[in-house]
Length: 285
Ligand code: SAM
Image 1 (cartoon, rainbow, N blue to C red):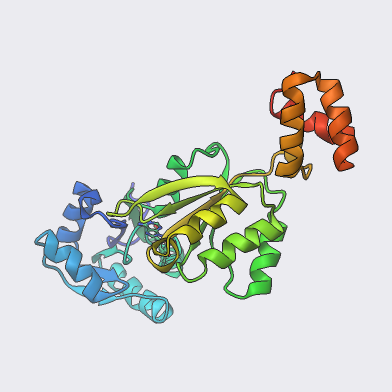
Image 2: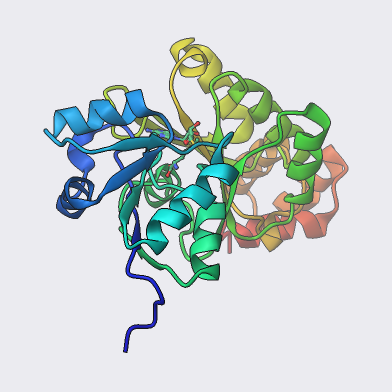
């Protein structure tokens, strides 16, 4: 029994995020065979189609016209048309238009066929070295300074790995905000220009990442970025600075754990329990 009232199908088709070879066979077949392709930018999608020698009808479907165009597309789908939805790059709907259209397809009982494919968030996450068991996707941070800071602050104790998109214009400001709101020692990873010529995926403590990004102006003047922030660790909630860690580590090479904790706590006026917690987390026996 066909669950769907209409014979039309909406295909959601991810496209490469940099390297055109990342297109899938199924994406190419779909883009060739559908009745029309709804895309964010005709010029942009034409480059892709031309590269793969595909000719098809393109119509614009973007943030500005999404509401009106969703109604038009629904009418076409009701007539039985097969339509592919693409964005400029990556997976449609992931910080790209499409949500309204998909919602309406559900409302009007129209079949949706999503194709798996490139997505910057997931590609960055799997290479980040941070936990992939539980993660949350936050998209772009607010552009308004205070809202951005408030949001980061609200995520301070988020235990899942956090994924953000960030533009080159704000990357430095955002790292500074991460340092201030989440902590200078939180491990973050920046995945830049994934699948492209200058691809680099690098991670370290937030304050060191700030120096790293400032080292080379190409890192903050050019390119696309995904920022991944390590989740909050229960035992790492004690604010132990590098200075304290240095003292403790040096003492620990010659003294017992108990003596190292006692002396470090006296020098830096820090609770002994916090140092024990640090030691446990870092597997000091
Ligand atoms: N729908 C897309 C996806 O599936 O990844 C995301 C679209 S969003 C408008 C564009 C943002 O994704 C960029 O500003 C950047 O943060 C991230 N991005 C896209 N391509 C990237 C790449 N090759 N390397 C790093 N980040 C990328």
